Amino acid sequence: MAERRRVAVVSTTRAEFHILEPLLNALEADPRFSLQLIVSGTHLSQRHGLTVKAVRERFPELVEVDAQFDSSDPTALVRSCGLLAAGVADQLRRNYADVLVVLGDRFELLSVAQSAILLGIPIAHLHGGETTAGAIDDLVRNALTQLASLHLVATEEFAQRVFALGGELGSVYVVGALGVEAALNNRSDSRSDALRATGLADHPYVVVALHPETRGSNTIHDLFESVRGALEHFPDLGVVVTRPNADVGGDDLTELLKRWASGRPRACFVDSLGDDFATVVSHAEAIIGNSSSGVIEAPALRTPTVNIGERQRGRPCASSVMTVAAEVDAVSAAIEAALTVPISYNRIPYRGEQAAKDTLEALASFQRRG
Image (cartoon, rainbow, N blue to C red; front, side, top):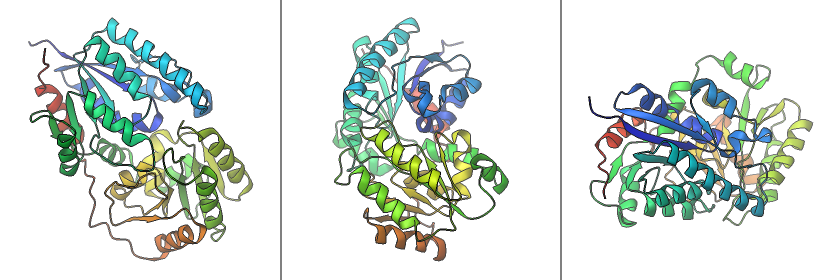
């Protein structure tokens, strides 16, 4: 029997883990591969819900790298990235990988990639070739594309962008969006499961998933006030507010959202919905904010999206995604449309029903150079 291909996968956030989960399950079950899961970032942060506990229940052999991602202060984040690079390097050397898998555009992944490059381990990058003009994610994503040897992209359009960035023939595979597969796998058709996860009574609700624009023109106060003010027009709606990412400004936005949720009837603030995220979103009247989940996963779950501001500008959007300025009237009108106007789902750019299977085949066929 051929030696197993050793695949290391790094996860630093709860959202990223749930996107990666179909691939992790497939790697674990396939005898062609040996999986090393490295967990770090906000997974190990108490204030972000200590989500490593839930990950360990599913993957007990994971290894932890505590890089102290407990603050959104820029200097603190730089220190954390340094700890992450050193910790990941130690883990990769102990169980030398044939390939390292990273997903997306989180800034801390540059530290992870640095470790792999210096150790001579090739990088497989998921979700390259995309554009999000309102965040520094574009810079990070394109840098990871330049550093990667294997490119696992969501659509043919993104494949062409990777080629334009220097991706070579034979190194770029269109595998779809793992997040779509994860959402469809984890969704429950039972509304009672969504209500149990949120603690809300049985009435219509929306999900608010709002993050700072790390490169856009809207401040966290602009974003927050546009959502708060718009939802004042819908006092009977329940509201599920999820914690922002550990981006610069994330702590301040978190405090604004927490205080607002605590003072609004039929509202709750959650650090992480975990495995319940897809179920909660699928039974919501809409997802409101600027999260990539509103653009990628929500259309597959048949939930309308009110996409605010510039963070996701540049992504192809389904017909169910309404992109509006960070202004109260614009957000309010989009929420009204989500509640009252029939929504079309006939144009969904992100597919992923077999993304994990296609990703496995790309990893199996990858030939390491040098």
